[in-house]
Length: 298
Image (cartoon, rainbow, N blue to C red; front, side, top):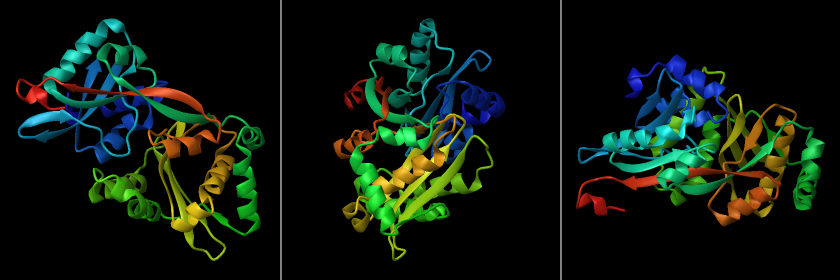
């Protein structure tokens, strides 16, 4: 089913009410950040599976849009449906990659999808309890920077976060185009959805210079770590320690998870691990069901 045929009220209802219905499956998120998207719908929205897609050489293929991590099957998950789901996907999209979420382990195994690691923390406790499990260097560095008058700012414009990230990290991710960053800014600034909110946070040195930024999205289950970047001075002073320290303090004692979004980059994964997070697996299914010789495309 194409996105313009979907009943958005029923769609968002199952996303909001399912434990694995994460922000990436919100219709407004998909509308804003995907080139196009379609969906597999089971019954009367008893289960859904979003599929962002593009077209090339007349072929529609599934792809992973920027700033998206877990999508997959949301709602009922019956093994008897898995083969039907696979056939429906490959009939309409003969090539591509599809993200599956933390609760799609059985489906991922049947499809031969590859696991990825995600890190998260429960915020349902006082910050003092969270901090006890941090590596000592986080608290020690944070105290040092606070004593040196480094400042945590809750009022930075979202565009300033995104543009600093683009400037510092953009060259590492050429697949993220300038328009993708603009679409993310618009998503934040134009959203009227209570289940899709944003928080922009930054850290400034004693002279007021911007040294590190965070862009967080929030739904009714999680706060998502979408963007993080540090300047050269920020990295030298380990400003991210204080930025996450203050952020976790701000949002502690809420019925939410803080989703670091994991990383396949060892250095970033090592940084997140210092907060003693829990781990979960999500999955990516890459397939090629094209006819020969296109079936040789990796």
